[in-house]
Image 1 (cartoon, rainbow, N blue to C red):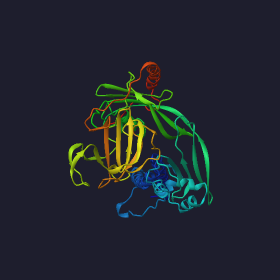
Image 2 (image 1 turned 180 degrees about the vertical axis):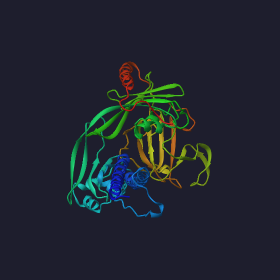
Image 3 (image 1 turned 90 degrees about the horizontal axis):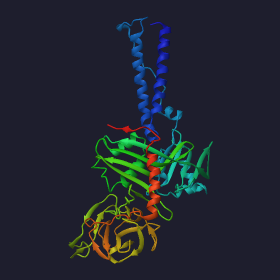
Image 4 (image 1 turned 90 degrees about the vertical axis):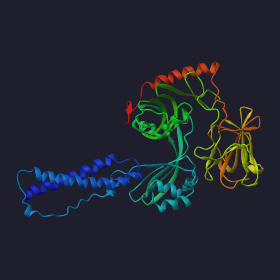
Length: 461
């Protein structure tokens, strides 16, 4: 092999290595953690591609031949490291604050390993605001490959109708960290997406570019009409319009669904958000009937029934047989307990064997009881209003309880009924002038659904 040919081959190999690395980088996911995991894979792909190219070059060059007896094996060192990929294009990581989060656990999920930052938020007057983590808030950050912070932004909650949000910003300039509060102006617009079910709701929404948070809303809004785990069929379709909050062209998070059409097994279901003055708002069908269930069957999202409604049960604490006029749900201590319907707090405090208990009054004659709680939500006070699904307390083992669980009662005129079998009242339909206002709003939203703003009808096999 001539020296000139060898040089050209090595040059092609180096160019190919860079090309493979750059292409792999462009396709890496937006999550910083996943990006690091795949960086090594990108490097391996580059090496494999280089070897393949070298082989193809040797096979396809007609100006020389290699004698197998004269072949010499030599390691080719490629200076392509995963951290080099991260240095070329570091990405912003984003996480939502969980109820159990500490600053350390949150930073760990963000891929940040920066002792200087932890020390800074302990001693800096402004930086200490990061210690006041609120569940559901968003933290976004940019760090180098070693996990040292470049900047961190702790977003406040985006309120309904707001055009800006307050954020704590911590930045590194040289070797110094600084913190400041800033008011971030953002844009709010409506996204419209359409999709077709091939395997599951989430596969179809992913293909259509719909965030998981919006897919969750879709399932919740139509939960009284469609069982999204059992009823879906290939060929079912959806169209959805939802709010999207953006900042400098980057999507911060999706907002509320404003309109939804879902066809399941040939039957069309529609939902439109309507919030007249003085109302908290709700979803209604084309005729103005509320899609909101009057009462949820269970006050816990995920749980198991450990003791049902019965006239004779052996009481584990009192050690005798007596009626059990409620349903017990087993769940870990601290699990959120939600209101099963809109209502007013009638009682909050301790009450004999119930321990910590919340009593809610709904539509006059209905009351619900939530007992053995470990604690109450901060907003729950006697006379305060709560919405369906709102957290009112946390599972515990107070009162006559042998372990953490929730005792739930459904009462009509103060008489207990089995909440798992009774026909629960539905939501109230719109009437009169409100129905007329709703019809006009529904027509506007229905027209908007006809034109998706993003990808065309998406399909997933």
